[in-house]
Image (tube, rainbow, N blue to C red; front, side, top):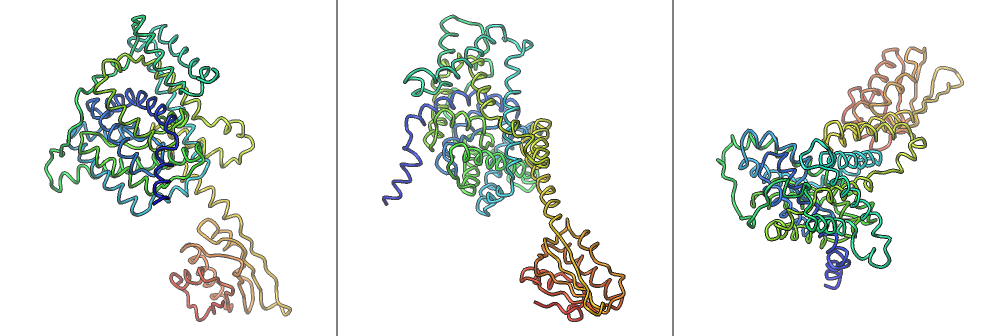
Length: 499
């Protein structure tokens, strides 16, 4: 029992002041983004706000990564646009429910372990792309073509950045209060006191005036409905988990603490199931808000819970005040996040990193920015990493040989990995037209990995046998022998496979 209470204290109450203050900052920053993502998805702003509240609160209890913020996101909103346009909100709620069920199943199957196959070059590319996207998303609020953007907007954004970066240097108080919170509260007070005509949160859309209510999706429960929502639900589940797993990995590095990826998969699913019953859209982890939380001092589950609860209180009970928050203040916070998120060291070390590393990183960045879909960027990065790795490992294959004293037998020695990427050089290393009585192939320092390798060995042995050469393969390890026994097609008794 002592260990249980110790775990609760560590996960919830080991950093109360920092978590409460960071949660306040995140809650304020969540509002305009939740509204914007709702607009992207084609639904009422309250759908995104309710989703952000529900997901943040639920994930704080069932998630696998303390201090990570999950809510309605742009990546998920882009996936659901067509579904909402063609079938409406009720089908979106049903798709969100099915998405959650799929994610829970993925967590039970421990698919979170697949994050081991995401290389560091992909993670850095993901981070840099996200930093660029966060920055680009702020440009409309600074564009002179946007209604309500004036020179005052630029002045307030500059003042906000000055507060964010200079406030921490103030003695004592600078470290007690997160500078982003000071920026938001301070600029809001100035705007209200001077009655400045600037774009504010109220300009983004109407805020809800009531608590979310439990409801069931009002759709026919039949096969046709399943056929409609299943593709969207699967896409939402994959995109949501991919972004959540990547964000969890980044927060792990920032805080130097581990996370349970499979628990996070299940938690994301549970959160989406709950939000579907309260009129919310599907969501996932938000790297931008998670970065705000961590950089503002958030470290435990309490920060995520505070962010969700305060968000609901703000939009429902304090909406008159929240509407007055200048967008310039939130833009300043997000620019700070984009600058802090970008891995500047990757630029400094560009010349020292291997070419393959840089190509993967740049491909991840370019794909993500071009498609505005983090999932596509990560997929391209992972595929390129796999190809480069296969090519590199495929080069670590050597075949040497020598003849017997009478010149009638040739002994080949294979060393390295034999798989689809190395089968061509493997086969080319043997002379199958040589006039010999016997060939012995020693593979004790080699490993056969796949069916392609077995097929290549088949071709080699059959070609030698056609020339009337007696072939013997020796030194097979247990795994290679099992694979060959299962998939080879040549007569093993004639070849004489030996241990």
